[in-house]
View 1 (cartoon, rainbow, N blue to C red):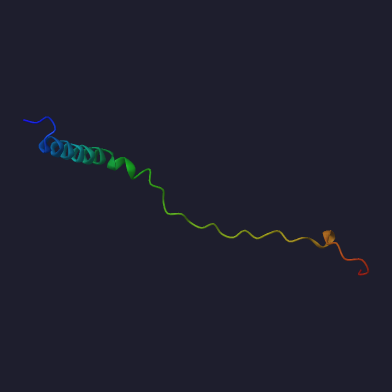
View 2 (view 1 turned 60 degrees about the horizontal axis):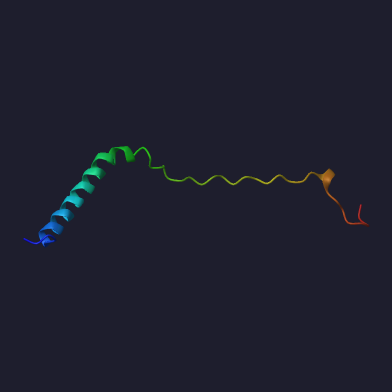
Length: 62
């Protein structure tokens, strides 16, 4: 019997896969609350327009 036989590696791989599936299965119901809803685009904000009292006119016009 060899120490690192292919059966040993196969059994570790199967155990790792089954353990990973077990961890995913246990935590699956907790993930649904952590998933964010789809993003919604914000409406475009209107830029404030300058009032007439703050308009600077070029020289020579009035």
